[in-house]
Image (cartoon, rainbow, N blue to C red; front, side):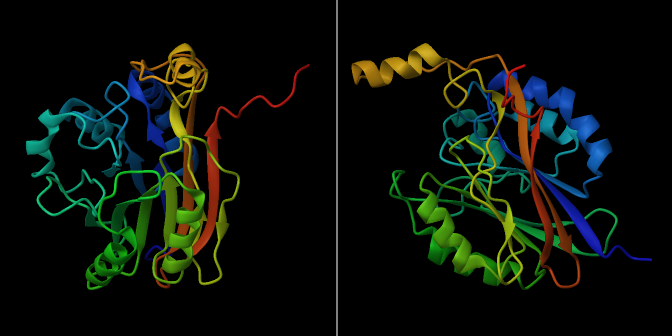
Length: 271
């Protein structure tokens, strides 16, 4: 009997060596527990907190990750540029101007089924670089992807919640799942939109939470105290894996269930 649904596991922004090491330890038991059919991870902060390299890409594939998405730090390490041109499973936001290295979307087989999934990576513009419009870019990309599959997952890497919600309403009924990334703070709003799209405003991050969004606290605080640039250093303590698990009906391409995952859960009370 052919599969009726597929579980898609999205791993939130992996931050530095601390996030990678923690992922190596925690991902195998989570895979055993949830049995995902397809795994997507945002890796734009995985190398020293900014960017990614080939070794990390290989490590993530070895862990079982099928596709790696990016964001505003995808281009921070120039040595990855030539590799980005050759690996269609390593994505960066599609709406960067034409001429940049890499792929903004891809279409992939869903293991154990005869269906394919399109993964689209976009980046917002509010409080971020003034790159090409992600809304019109999404229209073009979705039209192209739907030539091969209606099952579409979107990683929208954006700062403003209003921009993420606006994109969600534009995409509802046209894609299966949209997950927001970039702020590194997981939001408690996993839900299914009226036309069947699973949605979370921000998946959070995978890495050290004894920090300011993954960076050492003193440096980040000094940026606010002094009003001048400070050199960021990735923190190390209190690691958590954040992500999203979505179930998609393979015939209708609609999301039937979506849940945020935080492991271990945050402590919200004292004894």
